Length: 386
Ligand SMILES: [Mg+2]
Image 1: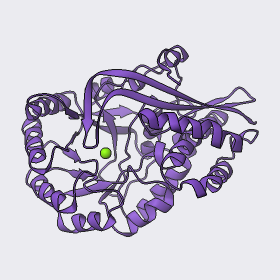
Image 2 (image 1 turned 60 degrees about the vertical axis):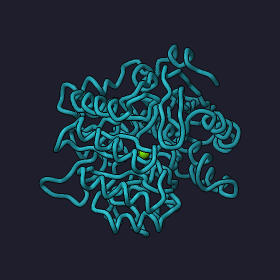
Image 3 (image 1 turned 90 degrees about the vertical axis):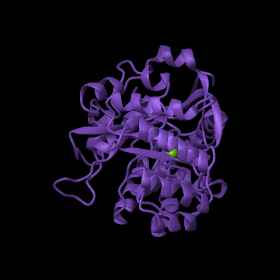
Image 4 (image 1 turned 180 degrees about the vertical axis):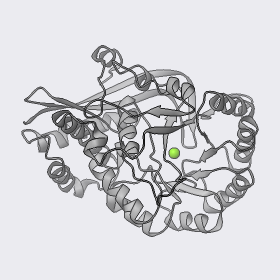
């Protein structure tokens, strides 16, 4: 079997309202899917992390930089091809967009491997470690409304009522305003319900301590990306000085990026992004590295149904750490804001929201060979911008 073509599909739709996180506002949803075709009619799908114009640039890397390196090779030679592409791009970027581009291709190669073997991805990478997956629903994006705290309080209550096991909010207005938003979310979900706070690295270490102490008082479960991903010393000080769990890693790449993050003991909870850090081949190495440092992993999930399905397989196959009768379980991250590429792009939708509502915040394992998904081609064409 030989790879005959690699295509990036960039999809986009309007959100109808500007949403924000601490770094920017956005009004459009983008998805970057990668399709790898073979001479035997088997096609694999993957996804690259990176919204908006980043996706357009990554398409060029996928099709014009990496495609020529892998055409004519067997799609089953995943390690060979990953290392060939990485080695040839190393001088031009060991993190960031080249690795995001490589991620989507690698995921598609695993989808092909599963289809060839007739096995779901989770069986290829180690088999089932659980029968159902817990889901947390994130929302509370920044919005341009008069009473944001009031809006957050209502939205948090809605997400809880929808059946999710936990929820997550954004901050980013500045430390003092942010604490008011967190108080509003605690009012919305009531005492005892688990929620997390995501800063998308907008604080200095000192500001993060101010917010982090308030999060402890409000019984927040984790404090995500409090400081810049490069600031390992800041992470380390926060982790040593705060009781709230410090989480991060969605902006880290490959085993070589993750190694110092873990060695410096930066995070209580690691959040690798499979569509960005190098794909499934590299995710498995990062997972092993996290577990070698006894750091639990709760994957970062963002994107279309391809990304969600990929993560469902990875979480299915993730071993318990450290192990025990009442072992804390990983959760599937689920964005509750509008995303047609997640909800409407598959011939048979994943229906995460419907399952969560009916089954106490859990979803069934994916089935079918590879990622177990079938893309609706008509839908793809309707939203394709490049
Ligand atoms: Mg985040």
